[in-house]
Length: 256
Image 1: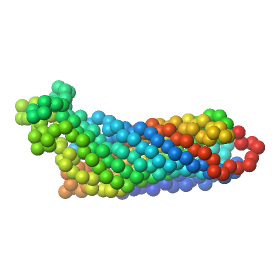
Image 2: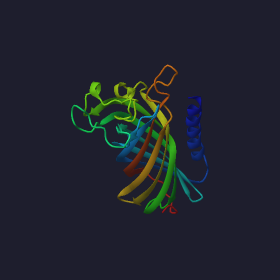
Image 3: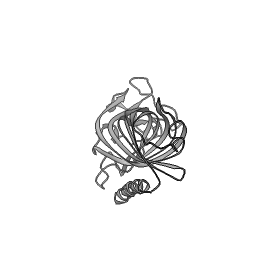
């Protein structure tokens, strides 16, 4: 846990350090909206076989551009998002076939949806056009999330689930404690980084397409020696579209 906190603090300092460079001055503010698709899972220890959980995210975007340092456009970006993430279990036999429930006759399915209010803050570096044209960008920084609620989707009675049989049949994994455990830690935190492309127009605004990865440093369940799981942290892949419009711009004939 101390190592995770150290990494989190160093990432915050990196964001501040990148912003503190001295270059060609800018003072530009843009605000807007964003939405996207999220694929998530949780790194459980002991391991829980999973696929990727499909979810979504949507919210508000903010960006302050402070300078151009050589060819690099430096900015601070932030978002306030509502996101649905979680995990989706792969309930398989030793032959990698779906486990069919004896009562329902259907392949067993289990999915947990967890809703968060998320706040990522990024140091953003861009290369290309600022006002009219295309710009590539990279951004990295800390993200915190606060738990809002959760729901379970399953098509079988948990008390009559298919177990792991002594002859090796049934489901491959006997780790099922997570299926009946509610989220214990309401605060999630970690590091997010993304690559994207932006198209800007002086009258239409800024349109962005980004691919982002988030690695959680906190666990959703307790991780002491008395707890069942030693790890239970999120990882997310996000594909996101954003639209921003300028609230304040810098008067400079060199800006293109």
